[in-house]
Amino acid sequence: MVDASYEFVVVSNRLPVDRIVDANGEVAWTQSPGGLVTALEPVMRQADGAWVGWAGAPDLELEPFEHDGIRIVPVPLSALDIERYYEGFSNDTLWPLYHDVIAQPSYHREWWERYVAVNRRFAEAAARVSGQGATVWVQDYQLQLVPRMLRELRPDLVIGFFNHIPFPNYGIYSQLPWRQQIVEGLLGADVVGFQRVADAGNFQRAVRRVLGYKTHSTSIEVPAIGEQPARHVIAKAFPISIDSASFEALAARPEVRERAAQIRHDLGDPATILLGVDRLDYTKGIRHRLKAFGELLAERRVAVEDVSLVQVASPSRERVAAYMQLRDEIELTVGRINGDYATITHPAITYLHHGYPREEMAALYLAADVMLVTALRDGMNLVAKEYVAARSDEDGVLVLSEFAGAADELKQALLVNPHDIEGLKDTVMAAIEMPRAERRRRMRALRRRVRENDVAHWSQLFLAELAGVGRS
Ligand code: F6P
Image (cartoon, rainbow, N blue to C red; front, top):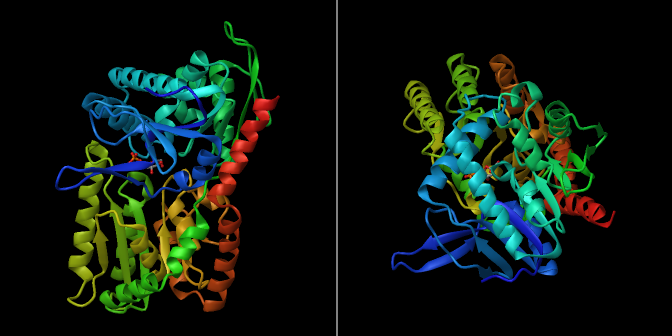
């Protein structure tokens, strides 16, 4: 049993802890590496907080428990829930649709029905643990119906929602057969946060087009519905960030610096290391990056002895067909480029299909002369911010897609359109050849931005907005 007493409740698809089962079958929980939990930890401790989410494996019926001072409230998902709600509707309908249909979204009614049912389960779990007048903060596209369901169950709550991925323009959004239900679901919140100003604008337009409600600046007028009085909902941008101080401290550790030097040595001491770090996802523009690099080698604008590309592509959503196909295409391309240009001592591309601990990531960032973020569409891209946070030596060049949310803030990066392969090649060359003074000037400005707008600042801004709503 759980008390309905928590003053601050976070609801997200995944819990902020990972379940580890050792060889003897012993279960332990470790905090997952994400920035969200770091940002919300102080608020959680101060306000008597609970976190509602899925433990990441099928059919786990777990009692709520305490982890590091946070109440963890697991929501079970069956194998069929995972197939239809998570892999299906979340990641094969909403994900491609919200990323501007880079891949074709699939629309299946049984996926939608399961999305509704699972969202209801999360809403009920949150309603059970929330104290009178508590603040509940719902995270991301997997749970867009939760705000309204929760408001119906518990009109006393103050409800926030933050969308970590883009919100598409209406021409695209309107494809969704359930476009009205999703918009109504989100409007159950008092504050709906987005990564970029453009995302908030797209959402407001969807509200006007689908429901005919009036919007003024960041405010949406929601008329009285049944028992519920008329309300104002705030929809605006709160660009998310990372725990930059802890990342900087990690990258400053002597063993991490030594590891960075070792990586360069092991790659054959090339003059330039290019680095890509992504989940293996079709939104990330990995194919475009490989194509540009392959052409630079083919045209002899770079030589394999001088320039080496390291591509970390961490496994993701491996049972979704579009991800399987992408993996095949990327691995074929890497094989071809290496076959054509690598030598025994100098790989053209070092392709790593693994996830790595933060220490190894920090070492890779330090080793990388040029960081390539070439997403075709990305809510924010925290890898770009991690790279900047790691570079206290004020060196390194960030090549950043203009289609990543981070481009709104990181103006001193070399901004690129990844669809323009010639432009991308020229930008990679400009990054490789950039003089030290310019690298330093740009990196300093980027670092100032990332340091000042860290994830704690993000959550403070959002929660302050929500607290304002609660008082009015
Ligand atoms: O960017 C959206 C997001 O849900 C992140 O919060 C998460 O880190 C990533 O996609 C991977 O999501 P998952 O492995 O849960 O599908």
